[in-house]
Length: 313
Ligand code: ATP
Ligand code: MG
Image (cartoon, rainbow, N blue to C red):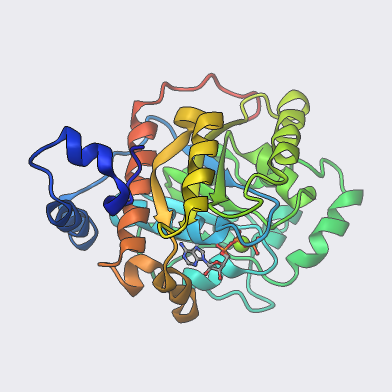
């Protein structure tokens, strides 16, 4: 095993005799506390990642906001699109999302440009968020009768709109369903990031998500692929967490990030203060893990080849 939950990472201990858990923890903490000295690489091209899993409560929102915040704090400009009427990503990023706030809803309807709804997060000047208001709850039904109903978000996230916002990364936080909002997110992105909780029934419903991704790829977006899987809420005290980790790794190999996000009360407390874990408790293992995961994503992005252009974007 070679994931970054340090006390379980026996392989590193044996392969690197100089390595000690304390030195490793100190180095990880330094990367969180001194982001200017540990900048992350910009991607070879702008990356749009949809964070999806129709299973509820697996860490979609937590991962979206903390990965985006980690990239932003380390010098990479990021945008979070809150595509869940619950508005949890907006809350965690300290962004207003009361009814009447310009939001992703108006952008989907084409009433305002993306820049009309994007605001700077309190987490970092490099981090923007397009909030979701409760209006979005009706969009799933309203979209059904609209022209180009699956392409609404793609149109809102035009290359010009993203150029105007000057972002390298876009993360789209999906609701826990496979409805039209999630389909819009899958059409607008080229990558899918799937958070998987290290728990019972973790893989339940994953087959359905993957077949929906296949459907979108064959009919609406040939560029779409699952680029990243992130294991979340890992509890080192349970055998089950290791079993899930091993099973996911054996199925998905290198798509799975080496870093695993530990279960931690601090991570769940942060949104209650409208903060990311990086702001709420920068020295915590949750913060360090999200920074490590973001760095892996950034390094993969820097090494990617430039994609063939998709017609229309
Ligand atoms: P939904 O499907 O409702 O949108 P989600 O997949 O976005 O949920 P989150 O909201 O990110 O999931 O997380 C679900 C709950 O678990 C939240 O209360 C969150 O604070 C908590 N949580 C997320 N990650 C962790 C973690 N690493 N340790 C402890 N609690 C966590
Ligand atoms: Mg969520």
